Image (cartoon, rainbow, N blue to C red):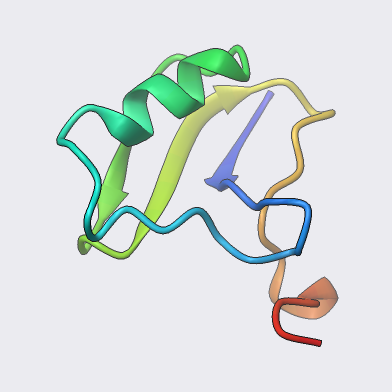
Length: 65
């Protein structure tokens, strides 16, 4: 199990600034996580997700590239 920021197919974090309050928690649950929240109103952070779920990594960041 791991935690971290959800990323999309483009390698960018899931934004949540304009999303409903439960958006991140729902997205994390869809990926078998046990919860999550919108960190600083910018990106979804999830807890206890399976290792196969892609999460943001500064060393492997490819957002916008």
